[in-house]
Image (cartoon, rainbow over all chains, first blue to last red; front, side, top):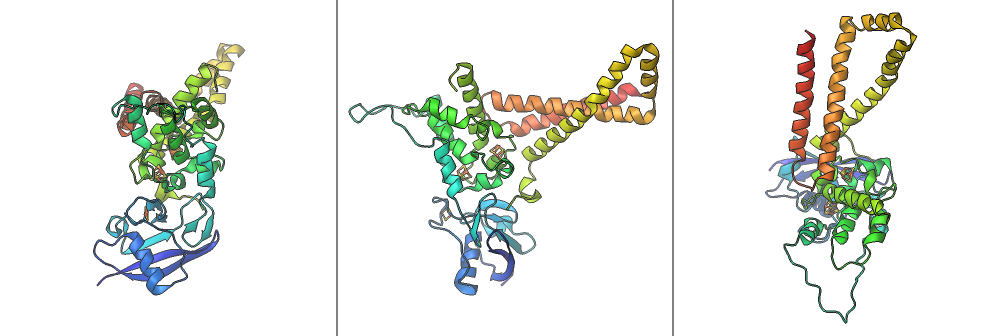
Length: 237
Length: 115
Ligand code: SF4
Ligand code: SF4
Ligand code: FES
């Protein structure tokens, strides 16, 4: 049986990598590796996961330098010379080992007006949204986000400007801008038009490159750039 | 903690880097350009002397670099505008390849014209 050499980040913002030897198994995921370390080798290792099937968005880490969801990343895809390097997500404060503080990440969803505001009341009839209408299609392109933070960790603009709302929050805002039932379009566009909003994006496309759900936050941000420009021309934002 | 080059090595990031570096170098060149043009105000002789200076091989080589930088920056800028302001589609790598091709063609064309 072959053995993986796994370097795992230990500590908080400052710390160091600790080497573990983990048996290589068939169809093994990176999350399996971390779980083996915690259950068999060192119970003090901290990490997060819940669903193990790519739905909850809690297991993202930096694997060999790139942000990934670990429960659906097979070791075979990422292993380099029998070795793995596993670190917490970038651009977020490290609490301990592989666990980051996701607070800023989700606070920015709220700042980007990520909440749905209904334009109808319960007395109104159901809204009818044609599945193949253009706006519904735009919503579909971004709605499957699981909030894993991979895009946010991959984005260098977040590193350079800590105020930047980031790809996930802007992607969320764009799905709502295209929701025909929503009644907060103007406020939302105003919320994402500032210095820390969509216009700060340099179109590196790191977010799009790394999103495990194959979402393109860059596409959403480009949409917001056009929409906020349109609103500004109409004197709204 | 921040990302390192392992996270950045993909086409979109390289395109950004080329655009940024060419932009900075062109900005640095611009004052020199205006200085040379300004010489025309001081009479023919001064401008002629400056233009004769640019006939030197090393300066000629620098000119090719300059043209390539300009082509890369312009093609990259048009690429960005098309990507962001036309309805989104999955063509960013195609656009990049075209921008790269245009840059190369302009550079080679300029070089052939020189010799
Ligand atoms: S495209 Fe924009 S949001 Fe996405 S990684 Fe690049 S700078 Fe960040
Ligand atoms: S857009 Fe993709 S990478 Fe970003 S949080 Fe959502 S699922 Fe994760
Ligand atoms: S554990 Fe839920 S997405 Fe990986």
